Image: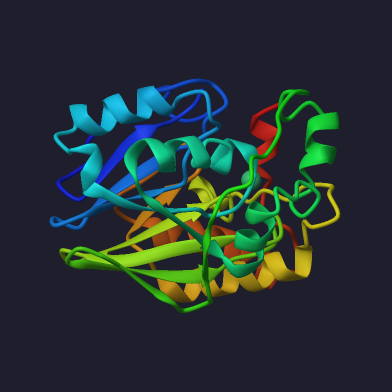
Length: 249
Ligand SMILES: [Zn+2]
């Protein structure tokens, strides 16, 4: 579903816009004209639905040269190996996530604990995948656009957000770092980290994006800074912002 001539949503589960299957996080396509990139890859049972949606929005699968992962959780990255093979794209993520993905290390993102808690199906297995590492501040060229990698840990280890200025609008692809209404996603897992999360919110607040495109829930194409300001208000009082997960269960 095209949001404008630069951004499409090509997958989104039941806590998004319900475009694909329930377990999918929202997957965005970024159009850099001579090439495209996807931000995240979905859970893994929707590869053909994603391919259909890319083409329905007027793009060729071969236009998509890169898949950029926000983090390794199954709803964002479970489908990346199959999708990357199907469309012939290279996969990118933060260095530590790239290493964990290459080693199919589910412990790194606490995915074994998440499976036990019923967040992912019992039979889910992370498949090893070649992933190119990204450092904080690294620029990723997508045709005439540039996406900037920003470490935004706190939700889980190895989490990055990506931002870019396109046609006068600052877009933030925030994964599970920050959501509409300034909600966050702290988990009771070994790699969810509150001090890191507070730093993440401060960094995102300084970025002052216009468009907030998170991995779940509502998105907005304008006024994103107001949502992040709401989270920042909690941080200034040394409180945790509202937790998005409370809406899910
Ligand atoms: Zn997550």
